[in-house]
Length: 396
Ligand SMILES: NC(=O)c1ccc[n+]([C@@H]2O[C@H](COP(=O)([O-])OP(=O)(O)OC[C@H]3O[C@@H](n4cnc5c(N)ncnc54)[C@H](O)[C@@H]3O)[C@@H](O)[C@H]2O)c1
Ligand SMILES: [Zn+2]
Image (cartoon, rainbow, N blue to C red; front, side, top):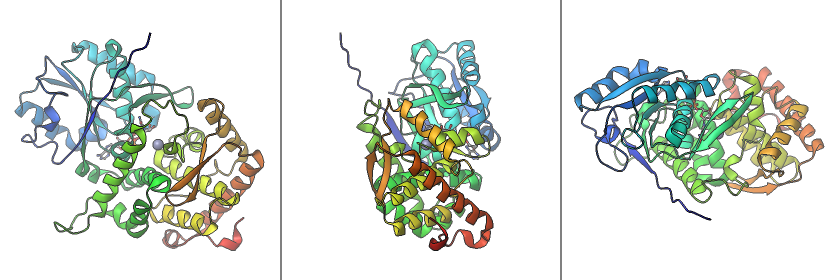
């Protein structure tokens, strides 16, 4: 037999989400009223920063909820956390449809709560409110949930898009600068694979975007708002790519750019590296591979390295300088992509090709470049590091 299920889910941009007069947070997906108590899962930092306002919101609006607080950070993205959420759903008597839980937090909380919701009673609707830049421009757009398992990133997980996602840009104003930069790593990926204008925005406004947390503070109505444009372009670029391949039946995905070599480094380095930091390095590594193959102009490679630095992101890490680790990472990815490399390489800013024949020798040469980049970064004056590309002559 065959059966088809169409999915539709909404991503709503809103502001002042915890203002009791803003109905968005309390709305049921698809309308209607709640049939009982809903679980509100809060990231621990969200609890600390907004816990009082969130409680006030639900109290004033007369919505019956119970709260639970979960730790952020990838080391907490575990099956135990999923079971803990499932247990709370059970204890408060969550219904099949009419009491959808709400997850307010970063990508880790969304992955955990989403996975619990997708398993509970074989799947219940939920609402996600991402509170990190990474969560807003990436996880929030897609359909995937998951947890790390036995040292592998997202080894257990499900496809379960929630019917409703709410995005309030002002929530990321409280992010630590490092977190914000990490999110920009994923924005950089999006720019490199398909959006030259987005790359130019990062190139022109990088340090300002970081310092201002993409809030466009001080911008007058009608004046350019690079923060808003960056978020909008990143979300719509992601949505466009995912819409045509939501279930990943096509394993050639340009959105996996920067995610071939980085997962293993990220997992090995936990909790030293944040996701977007590792992705940015993965983008640089791919640019290096592409330049070494003659697919990408070396000037463009250096431009990519320069913009990465302007965002305050490191370009290299000992993991990327370790050719054996890179070979293992590629082998892991080939398994994940069903026997193919399907490696996205940049040919220009905003343009890519897929290759399937990267050799061990190419990885060794690229890793050696990453080692030089690392040495250069380590020796560079941090004050000037963000402003210039590495000396071309000193690098292979
Ligand atoms: N399912 C998907 O499609 C998808 C896509 C992208 C990323 N992810 C996953 O997301 C995770 C990374 O997400 P992340 O970077 O948001 O990590 P995270 O959820 O751990 O959040 C990072 C840190 O920021 C804190 N925080 C959250 N919101 C805050 C706020 N508004 N102000 C201050 N601090 C805040 C958290 O407590 C945490 O310490 C990875 O596990 C990655 O695999 C999933
Ligand atoms: Zn990612």
